[in-house]
Length: 300
Image (cartoon, rainbow, N blue to C red; front, side):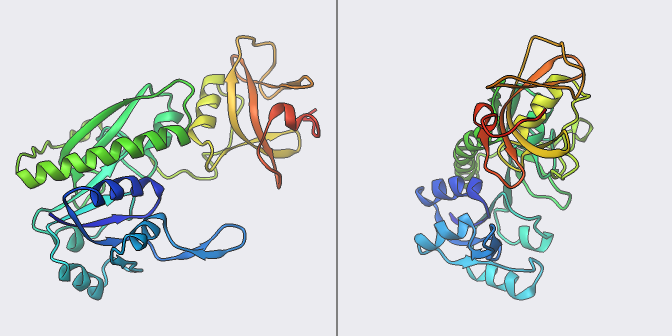
């Protein structure tokens, strides 16, 4: 099949690579425009564009997905199928273009965790299982008919980075399998049960704020769900710190928000138990392990 691939970050490159190595033809890639990134504000391309450019695949970078010239450009490639992985919401006039439709890879077992941050919310909520779903696009976001799903167990100490990377690899295989079933005509669609839907909204600065008045498990799950990006933020003393790794302790001798430290370890009291802080980052400084932090800083 001739495929146009829509995607932007590293997560999408795994699927793009799998399709590129398959019997299918990637006739074009659509990704976000180049923009300034990092402290130096250097203009850089997306991970998907870098991959596509290296493979001499035509790249489209529209500012407006509804623009008529962009839609005309898409039609010139005569693609059979559009595949979407980690991209913007497509307008109906775009996703209805190819004869075999447009499907998306989503980082949850839909209808659970519809929204922008499904991987993070599975961790934040302390789930022991998540998964991936491919589904045909509909006008309402994340509501289309399910094609294939793959369940994934979550390790109790896994963070966003490790789960994200595992899901990117597994998702690539699911994307390829979905394409093969669509090509063969053996794909089966299943409508989502809207009554079982839950939201996975975008991660905001407010969500990143740690509250040690909550249980140690809730605080711990928020930390691992946001590690390493964007990072959970703790207000300790008069300063803010990003916390990247923690461990729930059996002891509960500290009051909520009370801090204790040794020469090598940091503990914070939560509503029920103590939480040991294992990796921390002061404002304007690098991320470091607690013993390294305590050689130059103190929270007391």
